[in-house]
Amino acid sequence: MSEQRDPADRGDTFAVDLTLHLLARLGLVALVTIVLMLANVPLLVALAIAIVVSFPLGLLLLRRLHSRVTAGLAARGERRKAERARLRAELRGERCEDAAGDGAAGGGATGQDIDERRE
Image (cartoon, rainbow, N blue to C red; front, side, top):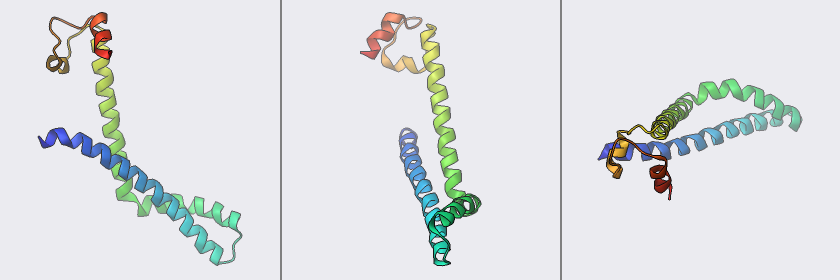
């Protein structure tokens, strides 16, 4: 039963991880900008320097969060690839292993069967 809940949890975790990663990156840029402005550097120059400096700092400081986001993207890509392969097999008229549970009888899905499922 926990296997059925894991994909949903990963999807929720991915969204949270991605949001945290984005906010951490923006916070890092803001922090470096504020530090440079305290050193009497003009705002636009401080912002430009902060953007450039935050790239390598983000790679070092946000390594765990970055790896979680990357793993979430990879898992999402694999799910999309599997779904695309399943849909292509269904369009070719091949019976999918997943289709056995949704009442599909016979050798394969016809165009009419696919249209009926969409409704």
